[in-house]
Length: 221
Length: 221
Image (cartoon, rainbow over all chains, first blue to last red; front, side, top):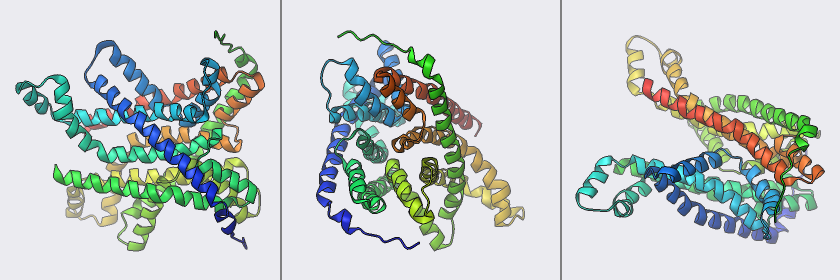
């Protein structure tokens, strides 16, 4: 097939790749910093059966966990500015879109964790005079988080993969810079191979860590 | 700022929305079929006693599950013409990438399904005189296949979501056609909202179906 591989052209642009990587990491950190606490809050509201609020939360979770990430990104980037009177930066649009979906996933993860803690734990803590919120904080919460830790790492992997969608609306992240390098150097395969590896290596680590954690927790229980 | 919503473009552009929807479903159907086939081989490969086959299968799963789908689609879009020496339609690049991507997840579903069948089933089958092949085909496989139905349902949902990635290469799926309408009619809010709602209208019932299937399977086994 005689294709002449040329990775030199890609490494020539390592500065763009590095700045893209920075944008990607920034997105991951901000999205997780929003989605994890919001998700935990939604999960607590859902399991505590707070009358009207619970229905709203269930609707929110069901809507956003079945929504399409790229459609949400496009909606927040192209459609949302029509609705709100303030300027929304590309970064903000992407963060809103990805956080909405990630928080719905996080909520389901935390809920399954809370529900997996045996009801005897609640009863025992109540018998000792703990209030509901103290039980969540000191008895059920810590056990639930421990159990869902492996799944949370899967969520981190999924969030990282979704940040590549920000490139579609021209946010300066790894995939976006890869596509610009590909179109200026005409070295599409090489560029995407390098960028693929940049994504793959840390994500592979996170996935393996998640599996290791799962095995360890299974043994501890 | 008061914005007046105007969905009247649907009357003049319904054929674009419809053809977009059909293209989305076509890509999803082809990729799911191929992905399930690839997943079958890779999933069995993961359980193989031959070290090389096992290693390659596990490496396949780990690689394709830990890469952003959009990177894969672009990689194949650039790489296929190098191998075939022809520019291929975006549809081909998309379904190749999505089949391989979803194949990694399908492999895990088959593997987990087969491994979830109790060891005593193998022992019992051998005790009544079956060889390993017969035990697998007649005893293990039918039971495992039943258990894979709910996870495959969720996989189908995730795959439909992933097909929107092809719109970034100008494949005429629902999202791409919504974008065309948004630009043509200068109605981004309505066009993207409509696309979001159409996806939800398909995926939300499908997700409820998954949950029901899972509950049914739990009560019967």
